[in-house]
Length: 277
Ligand SMILES: [Fe+2]
Ligand SMILES: [Fe+2]
Image 1: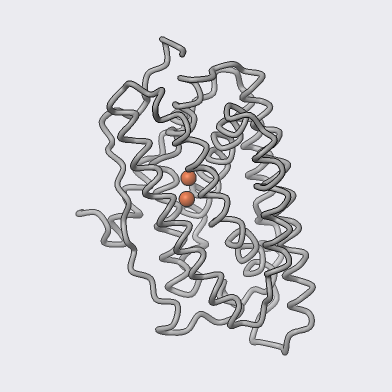
Image 2: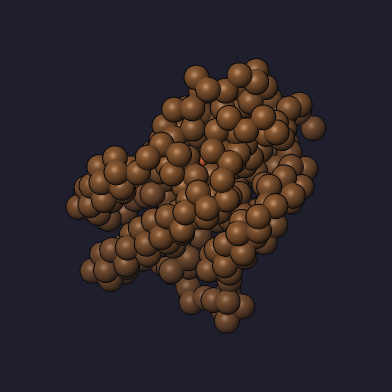
C-alpha cells in the first residue's frame, strides 16, 4: 500500500441515479444524431462497447475493495460500481433498439467478448486490469466533458441526449475513483503507462472495429432519412480527445482532479432534474 495516497474526493458521495429513459416515445430513428449517418454510427459503435466494458471496470476496481481501509474511498468504490452498473444496463437497452434498426451485432459481440474479456482480462494481472480501467476512466471523463461543452447533446433525439448527458455527468463525478484505488494499491508510474497503452489499444481498436462493422451493415440496409455533415461538423471527432487524453495522462504528476469540471457535471444533473437546483 502507498501510505501517501489519500482519496481525492472525500466530501463527494456518489450515488447511482435513474434517468427515466424512453427510446420509444417518440421512437429513436436510425440516424438519431441530427440526421448524421457517420456521427450516429460512431456513437452507436461505442454504445456497443459500454455494457461489457463498464462491468469490466467494476470487476477491476471492486477486486481491491478488501484492501481499502479508508471509509470514504470504500463508499466511492461502491457508488462508482452502482453508477457503472446502471450505465451498462441503459446502453444494453439502447443496443436492443439498434437491433430494431436492422443491425445484427452477435458476431461482433462474441469476438469482442473472446478477445477483450476471455483472453486479455484473464491474462492480465489484477493491477494491470486496474491500471487499464483507470486510463479508460480518464478517456470517458474527457469524452464526457467534450459532450457537455460542445453542444452535441442538444442536436440528438431527446432520449439519446438524456442518456448521454446523464452518463457524461456521472463519468465526471466518479472520474477519480479507479485512479485513487490504483495509486493506493499499485502507485508505480510504469504500471500507469502500461494501463494507458492497453486502454488506448483496446478502446481505440474495438471502437474502430465496431464502427467498421456498423458501416458495412448500414450500407446494405434500406435508406433512411439523413443529411450530409458540414465541413465544421466533419472536423469534430473523438481523435483529438484521445490525443489530448494520452498526453495529459502521461504526465507523471497527473491526477483526474487537475481538471476541475465537477460543476459541469452538477449543472448537467440539475438540467436533467436528477439533482435539486
Ligand atoms: Fe459509465
Ligand atoms: Fe466510468
